[in-house]
Amino acid sequence: MTAQFADWVSICETKARYCRCLDTKDWDGYADCFTEDLVLDTRPAGGNIAHGRDEALRMVRGSVERARTAHHVHNPEITFAPDGQSADVIWAMQDRVDWAEDRVAQMGDTGHTGYGHYREHYVKCPDGKWRIQRQALSYLHFDRIGVIAAGG
Image 1: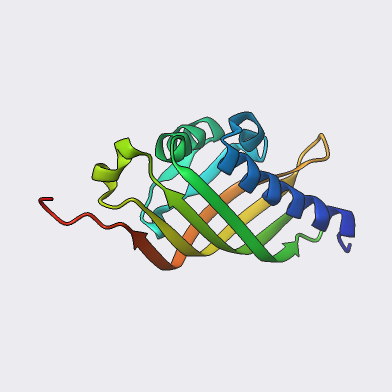
Image 2: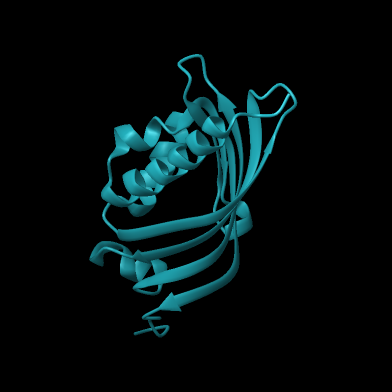
């Protein structure tokens, strides 16, 4: 079975909403982009792994809630399962993060711009929405901004 173009568009809309809600700190909208059994793996980007949507949201909010962020994704490579009810997607991505003052010393810089990929597994949920069930983030290039010298 060939997936419908509407499903392709719906997956792209989910990811667009993911970026907008993350950057505007609309945590309810952001949460709705994921299944309850989400596995969020940022270890390839130097982070952690979270099991479950609630744990993942706590991890993300704890990291960027007070930061100014801008996430951009493009060039989706979407491969649908034969039944059309799930899909694996690779997104090229860029993120910019400017840390809040209280995080600068902890992070050792004032922010970063990263370039890499999201590798995700989407499922079509009973309400007809496509949601992310698994996500892994990796960087190809990472520019730290405003690096703080050790001891200063």
